[in-house]
Length: 146
Image (cartoon, rainbow, N blue to C red; front, side, top):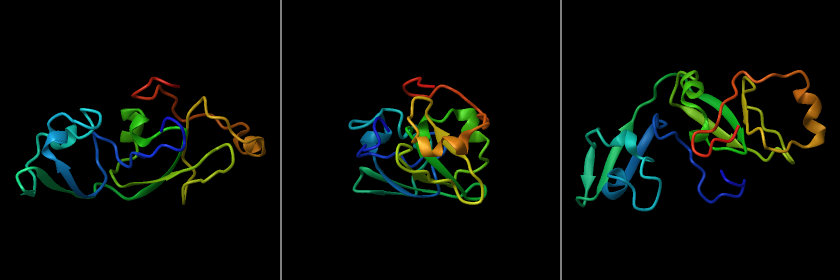
């Protein structure tokens, strides 16, 4: 999310899509004419459930693991390192985005936050992070930010 106001929030990771039904143009599956050519790579080697009009492929992705909530600020889900994402043990990741300059939205039942190192955090929340150390700290996948 290159700026919190991005018009296109990525709601799944290209390598492990969330459960649901996906209708994708064959042009995008084969290499993408509008987006990143690897955005739909997960679907390339899979047989669609059905094909509409010879150009729209329909896929149903089942749930793997228990649903979890995650909160993100300053980055998108596909920027989280693959090894970190794999530790969730599920593809049913329910996302909430927040702007750390003015708000804090912790995930339900546990507090797991993904915060870009360059993300400013409002001073009132500094005490919440005192003494907290990252469980993991990696470079984001697409733009190599810490």
